[in-house]
Length: 413
Image (cartoon, rainbow, N blue to C red):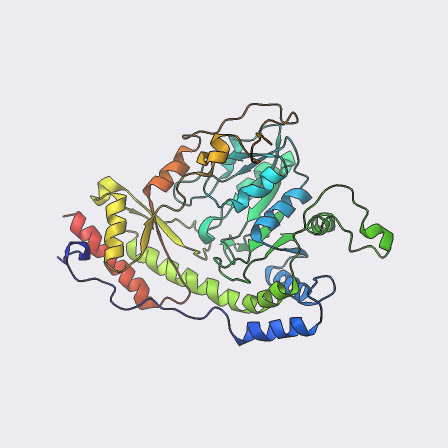
């Protein structure tokens, strides 16, 4: 039996992980063209328009709006969905704050639904348990490139008039029953920040199905200015407050070039992620990140769970052993479920106030506490996260699998 590196044995991973350049001449050429326009404003230039046309074609969507970030994309979708004071929006307790910020800024109440223990996504059943007469929308987070089970969610929400917003920040080119995540709900929101499959530094976009949603979303992302009217007096006919979330031409230029790389990036991550799953799924105590049959993940990261009793080792020691073998591993994903953050425990949405939790439009008492979503909490308490990169080689994945087998064999003795 091989001696673990953490106890003085030889490391499994003795060569660097594969790396590569995310940006190149294609991005430089697009930036040059953007600057030569002599404008960087999206409405006068062509780069943001080209990017949206290219993205719509790739995703088979009719309408799209560009934004300054993935967070702002979700906020715009919520605004276009009519979410406002006193409404409830159901979302995942394991997500970035970008999924939450727009809800609170609309003076609505975030409500958290529990997750499937294996896919780490909300389900129709967990969402149904949280629906009330105040539920206006659901923000479905496709975590780490793994699509949620959308058909039952849509069947639950559509008859009730509940808008479904897909948070695809981590989930480019992931497929649910042959359909791309982001094209199934009422709105699909994406991110271009530096920690996603593709990057333009920041930026985001929203896909939608009908012209009415498109017009409202477009205005909402641009201070409620009506860029479509040929009457100059209509431009600033402001009916209600809306933020300034416009994408600029430099962001759009980089995004155009990045889109050309996207299919390869996501396909490569899928191949590597599936290779890793195949290599570790039968090891004692290892619970893989499940991708349902008929679906396809683009593996923004790889998160598995440890059954400590079956594995014979606790999570912290397993992660430490992986790291010692040259495989960087971190426990969990978030430090806690979102509803366990101070702003929810203290009901302080805006600094120094209890808004929106105490608004008269809501008229109900709400409390957030540990135990609200027990499965989600268990996921965070038992999971270990690994990086996946499109630049990894097959040997890199084989080294990870070797490290898993070495550690499992040691602790199963």
